[in-house]
Length: 422
Ligand SMILES: Cc1ncc(COP(=O)(O)O)c(C=O)c1O
Image 1 (cartoon, rainbow, N blue to C red):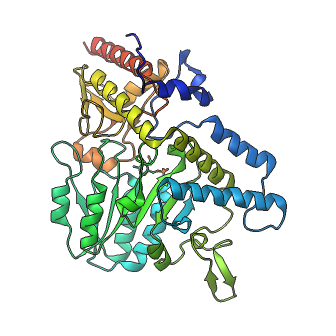
Image 2 (image 1 turned 90 degrees about the horizontal axis):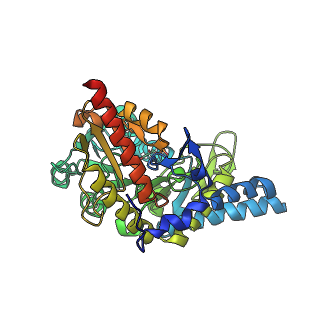
Image 3 (image 1 turned 90 degrees about the vertical axis):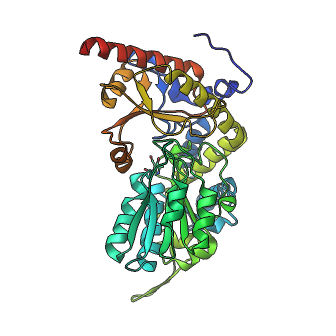
């Protein structure tokens, strides 16, 4: 297959040099990294920003009058402004730094869920959710007596909006759903979900782990009460993520973690709390990582999320075109349209008679990194009757040539198994 660059397909060519990790060989073959839904790679801007912090102005934030602490505080709080602007939050106070999306959901579960739900109240989730958006609500349900309800799939393997409309009622106090599925790749109609939920007086949390790194996301347009994301999936280091919450909602919530930084005054028998956003940020935070998240956002914004989305859609169309030519493969989730739109830039699939783990192990021999297993969506795999799937997930630094390498290795692996199994 010859590679014919088109105007938009030059994005990966332009940015690849910024990602030093991509220059290596794995098992003697050039690395083809197709596990971006699990975690993204990091550009030099992010790596250098983290290093600069530790090399030049490492100090604790909000505490010292000295120069290094002031510099660290400015950079740390400046990164919060960048997150707020990136998702169009109305105020910087609406952005709480967390370790990751899981911690962000747990903060809402413990601070809001445990204090606002009663026996018989209902929480609507979907069978598509990542474990991070199921297990915390199980804790809440077990403790408060609230009941979990699950939206299932349409025949096209997308979020069933019609069933959601039937499930929701005055008993519904919370709807917590993903924006984009990390397994099916479906893009949920979050604006409509929020609008319907709010009509019933329910609050809405959106898990935006798989959307924020790949498309423009505007919290005011979505209208959600909370939205969560992980930095490590959007070019930033691990150990940093964020919780967005509407100001009045966050103000109504008690702190969850107690400790330094989150207080106004501490007495022996009680304390008063800091204003937002610090009320939810106890202890020394991941300072360098938060600053590097700001750099990641600078990097994404310089390219433009529209451009990233458009390029990834083109790659998606190509990936599906190639995968669909392999008869043994069954891909899950909705099909993309001719332009690759209508779903995320990933494909979870199974191959007849070959376990996903064997596929990924053999592809690794060819330098191709894909994920296999349940992708932290046990209930969805169980719903689909699958023990595991293999998943290739793309980023804007991937190329058509890499998809060709993946497809060739996949076909060879399937041929090998076909011969082996007779
Ligand atoms: C849709 C979705 N939600 C939540 C998470 C959890 O992210 P983290 O492990 O960074 O908290 C992931 C990670 O794979 C995800 O894909």
